[in-house]
Image (tube, rainbow, N blue to C red; front, side, top):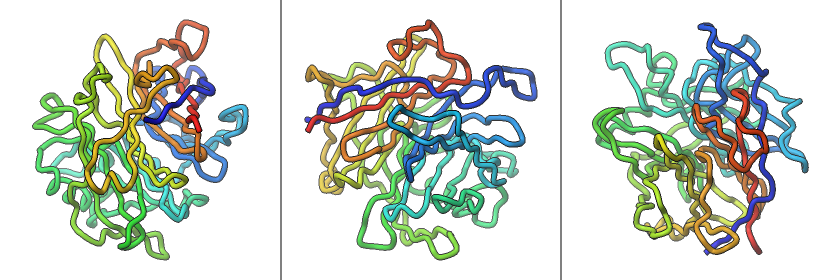
Length: 340
């Protein structure tokens, strides 16, 4: 078993305090995705961040003292601004491109008005202005071709994508994995799941992503089969660790009474063989249980991880800060390190 301990915790101011939307409602930070590349954290909210010079995707330098929110850079390309409900990022194995997925949890079959909830985006790591919609199938504002692939492999009328990771493979540029959190008949009639589907892919010199084979199921596990897991969980993030050739799986739980999450790891060999992941332990040897709804995960180096939380409208800070409640513009985070 791997053991981790908390190095630091804090809150990121994601936009100005008191920011309101067009209806005059206070905007709430709901950060659900993060990736680390080139000394920066790139984060995304699953709710829009209003303002002509803002978007739901932004970058912060990461320093020894933590994220530097004073130097936030919002990514304002039209393609990035129109996509809604970001859920996870992935870095390609060659670290040349960033991939971003939205939730794919809603669609209007007669019109294109909900296409923006169905997006896989790709852009060069230092050029977000070149972002492209992958697998659009000729449709406006969405990866509708990809949605058809997901429909075929998942086979349920409703599902929600919350994980994305690119891992090495002999074919193409790698294997692109999508993590499924919810599956069922409707958004009100579903089960929490921890399923992974995907396909091999290639990105050409123009930044166009193409899938090379059909989507299929690659992995599944049941957190409830582990005695240390106290709550029903669904998958909330995937992250490839190139330093150690392994895959992290983040799960979270949410109810009216409690929120939180767990962290898991599986080697690429065990992933390919379908073996169960290992539940990450805390310093005392028990399950590492987050007190907030863990939604985003980034590998900082061979031993450190950055976890960001999307607590929705839950404002309690718990142990992260001494004051009673977080401000609406704040996202909470934890930095973990693993024992050698």
